[in-house]
Amino acid sequence: MVSLVLSQTLEICKDVAGIAGNIFAFGLFLSPIPTFRRVIRNQSTEQFSGLPYYSNIYGLLNYLICAWYGTPLISPDNLLVTTVNSVGAVFQLAYIVLFVMSIEKEKKFRMLGWILTVFGLFSIIVIGSLLILDLQIRRIIIGSLSCASLISMFASPLFIINLVIRTRSVEFMPFYLSLSTFLMSASFFLYGTFSFDPFIYVPNGIGMVLGVVQLLLFAYYRNSSRGDFTEGFIVSY
Image (cartoon, rainbow, N blue to C red; front, side, top):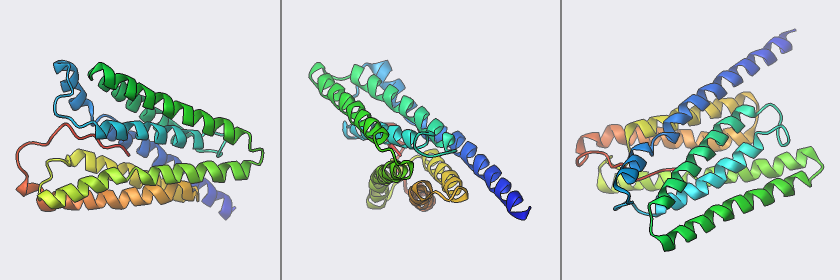
């Protein structure tokens, strides 16, 4: 009886954490909107570097892999992982398409080639995983791939953290973006902990720590910032 109550409590806590993570994730998904409103209005990418957009292309692949991991074909009872990453993939693809529409013709083909490469790689991952008949091995392989992919995405906030320390300014690290990073990562860290899933709580635990670091840096350097926050640096998680 006690074990049943404990199991039900953990399941409720897991669902609450997953729903919270989905909600907080919107803070990350919506953060590039001001940049793209400006790009659309001016019909130009202006001074915005191409590097963040290539990061978004890699982010698209990351979201697709993580969404695939959350499906019942790979891991049971992880649909909240699929929902948040599916929405993230849609947002990433929309931002990439808007960027492609605003760049020179010769660069369009290069970016479109990268997009096709992402979907090609994802198709290979999906088909290859379905050929693995042992469900446990399938989950371990895709889980390890999604975990490694998500951890590698934390290179983006590490660049920002280094930039803040070097410039002693938080103009490239908006507060609400850092807060959303922390809240989303903390929520999915709890989600993975309650479901005893290391493929979820390990990468999100790292993201949670990096979120705390960003918030501490913001508190320390906020009075030294030069001017307004830039809208041009897009970070993918």
